Image (cartoon, rainbow, N blue to C red):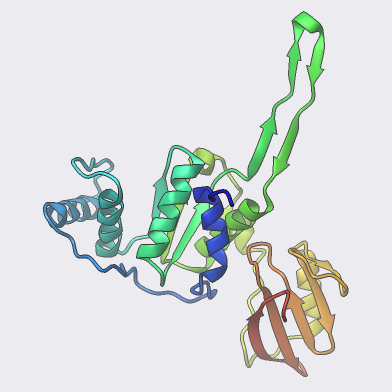
Length: 254
């Protein structure tokens, strides 16, 4: 069996992440069997001091590999700030994201890269008078992780985003994203018809037979929604006009 790439390992491990409760918020806390050693404590203190002082640029020298990742993780814990980590390519970004997930199992660590598996821009070859049409292939798992990043940034503060240069391209106005949120709370009364209408306004499709990402279905007093950023399904159980329970379920086993 061929070895998985760092990106494939990250995607396959995403299903085990259990700290993705919307609205939950925790301080950054590193989980590790090791403590800062050597020059790391001084480096962490200096980096944190520079960040708090508003310095725009700082350079970390003399540490390689996982030691540098650990130093950055402890610096994030020290400063308690949402963090964007940029990597030059997808493979390194996936490796760093997995390392950060290991360091921060109780916080949101997101992976944001281009969702294209393949992209061929349109081109013209004068020598053969050949026009090549634009062609592309989108990776659904990477697209889901991009949506997960957006959802995390809108609902949590304890977020670390590991990204490639893909993040420099504008995704839209954050206020427009916030305008597409549906806020439901257990024990509060809502008109079920308004909930369904709101889901349709948010571009969800009703499909009572097959529940895929971006779809929802209704079974009696229960609404099941498969968010674009989740592998699991959100089940909303109503008792009359009151939200009785909200749970996450496996779409295969229910």
